[in-house]
Length: 218
Length: 237
Image 1 (cartoon, each protein chain N blue to C red):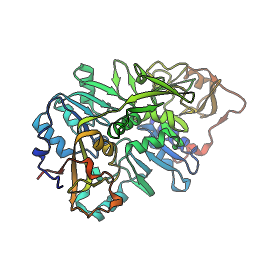
Image 2 (image 1 turned 90 degrees about the horizontal axis):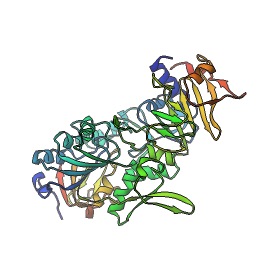
Image 3 (image 1 turned 180 degrees about the vertical axis):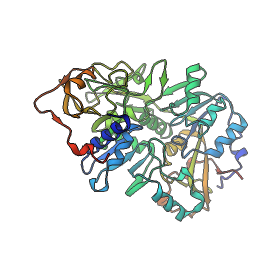
Image 4 (image 1 turned 180 degrees about the horizontal axis):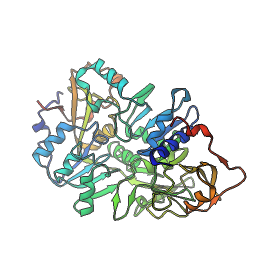
């Protein structure tokens, strides 16, 4: 099924209060065109799940500048002064996780697991209020799986049904996010016909993608 | 030692402790400078937490590769960045993967050394480098996983904050990890965290051991094995 749609069509169901996962690392590998459209549509009270809060006016950072985020679940907010400011002012709720735990929490959400059993965060503020379990005499922390209403991801190359290939270091959390959301929008730099991608170079499978938009719109 | 020179000295000293075959993860800030002193013949591989093994220094090679495939793709999203989200290059044999795999490599003990900056470190090897309550919340990024999973945790830091010691009896800030640090590298020397406390392995002869103790809150163990840092680490910085 050809999933290529206009940007307006792709985001038409994204509503105020939605939980949204956005790919990227420091804004690199983020779906900038979709983010632009979300800013324009001015969707409010978003619960955002991402690696970091981006930088000022770049990547997911743009949504903070426009005061669209109610809560962010991520591993770093420092590089975006706007998110730090809103957090200090009490207008932005922040839930921080070790980046590796966050990665697996998203993956668990997409792949039918209840959560993550990890040592990361033990003995720190991260463990507060959370379940701990012992396996073979070793203590672990339980981190629950994350899911979202929407995932917005970017890939360099994709075919029209949604098989895609990430270039460079742009994978980050995108493959897991695609699986963890009810509706995944893939922004693509270079769209090709079905069959043009070799099966062995496909990183994320078509079944995980619901809509495809071209970088820059059109 | 002047601050920038100190940063370069610390970076070069750490590079000297990296062994052939090591997979090394460098944190943001001072640790990033270590890569300036890692040469190809050292046979050390760099891990980027965002999903790279074989991080290099310049973006040139990957730009060239991408241009060859499709000129439209020469945007940063299709390139390589390091943990500090700045452009980086890759070495031959490099590979890319997603965050789940990247942190699997970290937690699974496949990273030989991580080099982290810090605000505080103490004599039990506890480290605090991600937030100052009521003042500054940065976020832990990958540091908690790296402290938990890397085989060796090296700290690269100025010896003091300029105002107060950073090597403490007990960290006062919220911890990034407990009992994690193996070795602390500063402009004053190299300090190993042992079961008995912090032992001075070697020191920079620009300082006396008394001066170093005075700049350190933790009681330092100084035994007959202590040496001064070899002179070549002060050259070509």
